[in-house]
Image 1: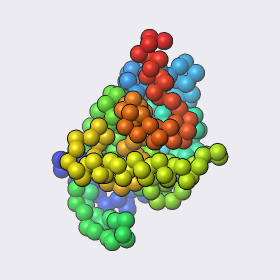
Image 2: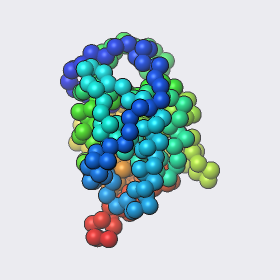
Image 3: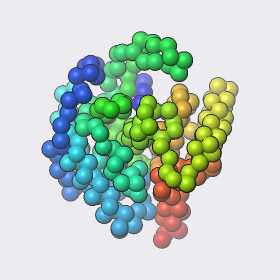
Length: 268
């Protein structure tokens, strides 16, 4: 879940969004070429771009992209969302995104008015603006304005953020511990992430201006989602701040965006 600062569009009850259906949008060639120029895709070789395109086409066929708040989702908009969405599963396959059907798109941040349970099990009534949300077993909601600001190599990508939550939810509620691949140690994952999370919380609580978005301290689930944004958008920042977490994510996503970045800087 990505929270924003402005209140723009009231959101209907989320329970009404759990219908959904198969996708009706087709890949828009112009939009595909445009989004591939975004820095987040720099360094992908020809074979990887072909595979990314195939995964995006699969997503467009699998998900219903529904407009809300007066917006109509075009093929180009759906194509851009799909391109960002499948980057994390480039070397994992599409399976982690199956089991739900709908992506709801608002023009901008939308107002969420409902109940949330904290880590202590206490339910609170909340009312705030959001730029995205992934619901366990249900749809995803995205702000188009925030999608347009994603992919620019600045550490922000609302699509990657919400789809990281979906990968995290494969094992149940999002908790920052997605199902790991064979050969990965759950104990090492927990240690490296907890150590980094505690460090960032300490620094943010102490008033430090951190290189990592303070929103990552909201919960371990948000820490995983925010750092997934950094992993793909600014891997050098994540490597510098929390190298162990970068290594865990490289093993989880089976990608090495820092290597791609360095190759691009060398002109390879």
